[in-house]
Length: 135
Image (cartoon, rainbow, N blue to C red; front, side, top):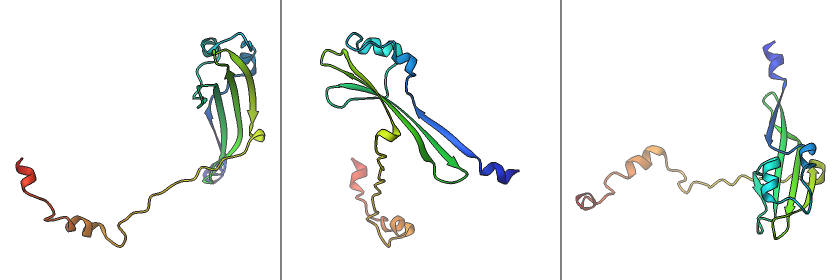
């Protein structure tokens, strides 16, 4: 029983995307950022250039047992605004509309190669100026 339960899938959901029914309450050309925030809430992400849009992102991941999780769905709702802050457009995108962007992990290599922890610890004995402690 324990072995079989370890092979079951684990689903996780990240983010928030408003329902289509909630988006119907937003009128393009009439509603503003304030009314959009009242109807569907503030987004977790906004446009970089002059805050031109709000982006609601939701991703679902699935993992089987101890395997790495894979993204099975992604939805993005983009609400764009004009210069006066009035809703200009509402678009919905899925995982099939975009490309999966692999995020690379940058690791800084240690500049202390071949030096053990004890050598680092004992190598600093006597490397201080007693005058620094007197002031």
